[in-house]
Image 1 (tube, rainbow, N blue to C red):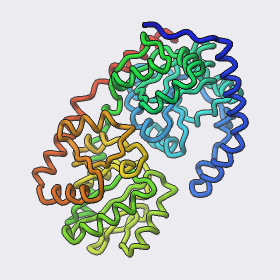
Image 2: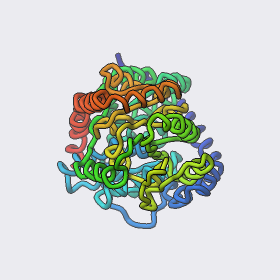
Image 3: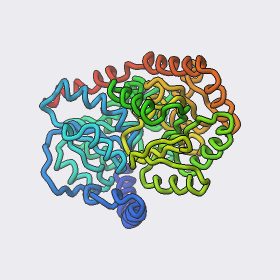
Image 4: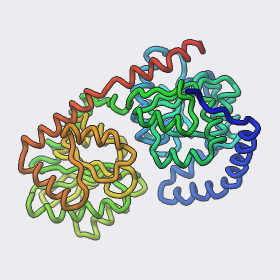
Length: 436
């Protein structure tokens, strides 16, 4: 089966309309950046990068990776390091969209890679970005489809790939409504490494060449957990959480903290030594969560203040960035947020790889295959509501053997599903060699 041919003229008209619409929306996009910057100043900073303007010189001839935010960046790091070890003389560029993703790239990769924000998908910004970095290879994580960016790569002979590609049924139906724009955009790709067979079929359905789409697995299974990180977590538990049963709730969104604080207050009577560790997903919400705990008259210790947990401490607020893996290692049970409100869930594999018992909620649309996999191997617990969370938490507390077995199964599940990293590297390497 071959990819459907689309009219170049119709594509030009569609892309011109798309570009004009994007230009018209830019004032509103900038206002939104400013508005978000009220709580998180990082959104107002470096805004020129989003238009392809830079205040310093950068190396050209880069291998360019784009990872939207923290989750995609974390998944990308092992591949970036693998490429650096094989091709140390080729500079790497990693772009992100969010300040949190930017901060994570800088914290983990430091000066070993270049980093800027991805420019907006308007012709002028794309051209300035491409002329600055002159990428020899472009690699997009997951599902970022940008018509002008892709067209520039295709017109200038830049090999372009989507890796760890995923596409929901809902997104597939939406893209199929504009087949000329999407089909011609995808025609610029040299390859798509889909997470699953179902994802691969959905990409073909929206116009991708079936000969270029391969289900290579999920790179997020290539989780890196340094021994030092585990050691730091265990030390934190011994020094600050001693004698407490630590329930960590990770990557929470607005509306979730109230749910978990209510559960904590109910369970505390059954587990007197319970300590709730909350890790909000976005730093601009740290103060909001702190105030919420205060309204409920719960004693809070902030990690940023290096406070010591006392007997009366109810909540430990992790208001720092980049420490989630370490905090998993300091906990007895972890609940991965973004799943008790309709946000699509977050990656549970890091918690499983650390070796902690994992729970998550009903909203896992962005991680359906992973959720299905861990549940089929009894490697995590999915809870549909507050009552199920309470029941699971009490069971994990009362049955240490059950808790340990859940953690072991979770870690084994991660280890048994690794391999996508080497397959994706093999997909990209011929294009790298050809560019040298």
